[in-house]
Length: 68
Figure (cartoon, helix red, strand yellow):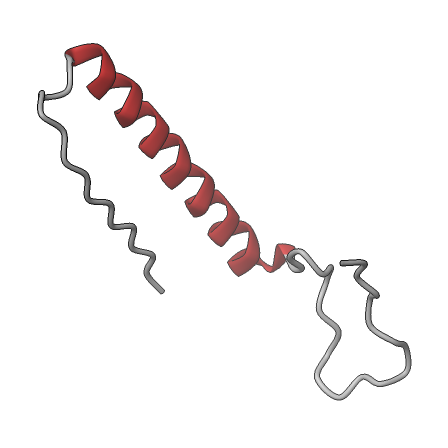
C-alpha cells in the first residue's frame, strides 16, 4: 500500500525559514496520522467511517445506516 500526495504551486518569492518550518510540521503531522491509521487498521483495529466490518457473507444484521 502506498499513499502519494502531489502539490504544485508557483510563488514569486521563496518561502521564508518560518514558512518552511510550518509547512514541514503540517506535512509531518499528516504523514504521522496516516501511518497511525494504517497501522491501527492493519493490526485489526477494524472499522473505518462506517464501523467494524462483518465477516463476508454475514447477512444476519443490516449494515449501518448513514445519514447524508
